[in-house]
Image (tube, rainbow over all chains, first blue to last red):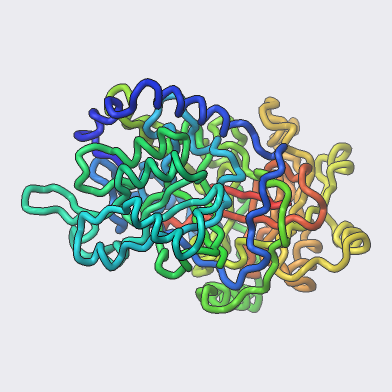
Length: 273
Length: 273
């Protein structure tokens, strides 16, 4: 996600050509796809379902500027015979989707992301070993090429996720945001070149991370966000359990929210392994 | 869903034996299932993805007592360089899940519904022709047996959905709630015997409807809710596009929400056909 203080510079990085390219690309992907047979990309069977969603609790870390989710009981079984709550959330909290419209005016909101791209081959790029030593570790083009050397070319319409192992820091005081003495956050993310490689050189549908931002937390510009969302792809942030799925072979299902004008929002994310 | 005024009688209908049976059954289904290989129940491939989710708009009908979803912009691209909203919703609005805890104290909340039951064979029982003539039409045991005569026994761990065709009434003034001169609502739902048949005689995981309530809107007691949620099964209400999927052969994916103590909530629901 995107700190208000830094975000003002983002649009400058999105050149006019890329901007209109992104809007055009988004318009295409907004066409209802039910009518077109998508490629069959489900595994023939699966042995287990892995929940890639963190339970959506007020205790989860949030990016600065956002509030944790609030749950307020409105009806109770004792009083009313049934129970029901009112829930208030900021869109970019919990395990959530970033829609292209989060960064690009007029681009696709979460509810209009093409439904067949919500079910995708899952590619997991683990940089956990490096991130354990370097809190500013970036997914590089070299990481992607190394993955391809082992598993073959990143498949068409894949969701490519970074696994940094950051989730062990949930609940550790400021471990997730990981601020230094000057208040600058440090957490891994996608480097600009890797993000551009994925959208320009490969045919992906989305990018995911187990941190709060597609970009490294200390990045001064939202280069990965701009590259990915600007190309009409979506993002998934604060993913859980990426260490429990294989680097290749799982299928991800992203339950993107559909509320009016959603720039993203909490999503149930599952993997079939 | 459940009008406060009528709900006070619900617990009386849930006998002590059934109540504790339900809680025990819920406790079992709350065990994380990732560890156990679920039966393979995905189709070998699929030709299309059908969105069974209504776009979550304030214009959707809501059950009396609940408020429509509210979306409030907090950040905008023009002002902040990125856009983000705050969203407030009542859990049982939009296309949504009813968790067992909606009716049964101590039962499973939405976030702890066993993940492998969120992916299920979809059985569609169409009563649309009858509902067009009878606004109080009920899914009966006879309807279920007729379906089985054509398609075989309802498969294990299925989600059984009523298609009443009610969605054409969305946007028609009070057409969906369909109140009579006395203010009583009229819309189709599951009859008590059919609901009990499904949970007692078949091995289902959930029940769905394209109306606002598992029960017929004019029902004086929430007999279908009590039978289904009381047995530890979940519900999905206000489903979209059930007329666009076959009576049998599709696989449904229910993106149940995970917020703390969720008695249910908006869910992205997709079908693979």
